[in-house]
Image (cartoon, rainbow, N blue to C red; front, side):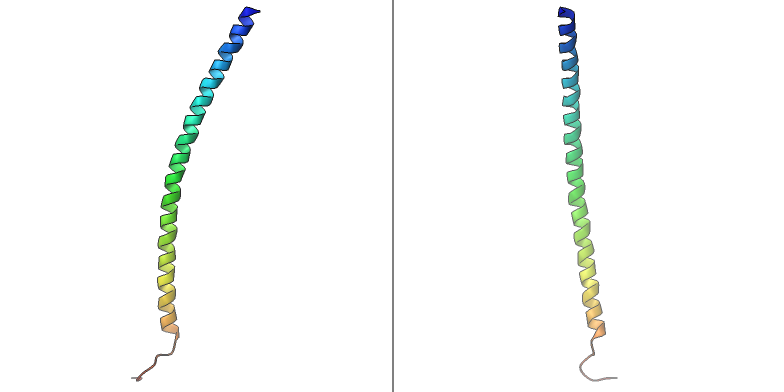
Length: 70
């Protein structure tokens, strides 16, 4: 009976060590994804700025010009 108890505790220790490693891996993945989120947000902001500039340029082209015609 004592051997079975010791084996159970040894197995529990192995499981806990594996879980600790999993926690570290999850933390690393969270940090890496957090960096990607920041980079993606920067890309989206740049794209929005480009689209706003193009829309402003189009608005200027579509309207009738005021003044002397050549």
